[in-house]
Length: 156
Image 1 (cartoon, rainbow, N blue to C red):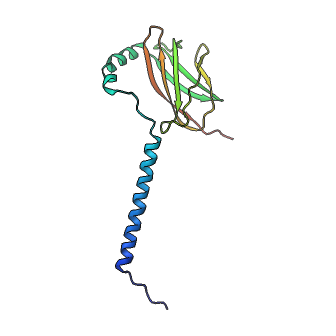
Image 2: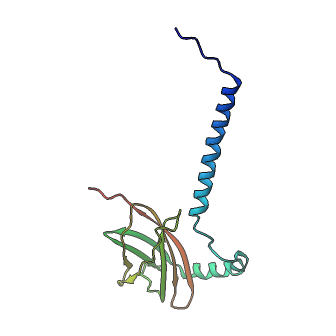
Image 3: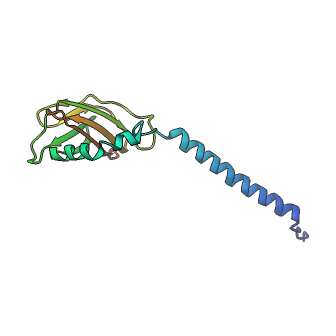
């Protein structure tokens, strides 16, 4: 039979320092990853943007548009309809398609109006995507919206 090892103050100190080294190391790694993947600010100057926020929101709401998006067969289909459910032909459309967590996968698809929807060819991996769009109505009103897009796993 071997004699039982005695727990000394030195052993406790080594365990204590080792545990906190792991905790601090993980925290530093997570903080570095968070800062490295932060996509940036939404606006350059939030005070200036706030001065027109209510007016812009009311103008956008006054359009009565509804927006939805779906991914299907290598295409992203963006539907913009008016309050009667009719398709809207916008004056211009800019969109950025990307993940919420980083900008590495960001892309700017070229949407083409097919008479009913705006369609762009693109290949997306499964998961959640954000489509950040800015459409301009024929009267010049800007319509900004972030549309959530879920790309399901392909069944085989």
